[in-house]
Image 1 (cartoon, rainbow, N blue to C red):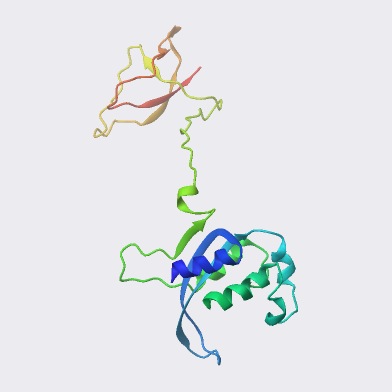
Image 2 (cartoon, rainbow, N blue to C red):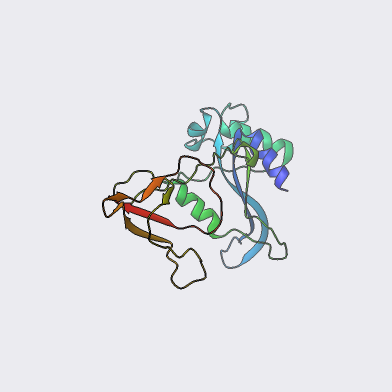
Length: 201
């Protein structure tokens, strides 16, 4: 059913978006829910006939030769029997998504059931994610932190299980007029127990 719905959307010029499954709808008297499986979609429509057809006042039979969205809708319905409707214009995409998710269905018998599936130009394999390294920034001067080595006489507790372990702290840059923190030039430093300290100059 999802494949047929996607093909029907594609025939109407929807090039990609998100499909949400709805299993029930209200009956004509609006008194009880009845099983009526269908999909709602948020998507991108190619061409400029979409806005024109949203305000169209013609009946369906008059639009068969139209080159807009409604014409594609009528020709697609005659071919496969699927109705692709355009809902009234909403102010925000968030509001539309909220409305569609508000009464969507979940199959609790399936372990990894997804309410929404992406297709076309918004499909999963089109998603490009670039990983960005998290920058550590000094809370005082807002500059990038550097790896430092302590060369003073003070001892630090690096055992994480100890109650004296401190993950972060402020320490003076000089002790008795002597610089006790040296920048580690090499990027490769051994992993293990370590602590980060902000040096106060």
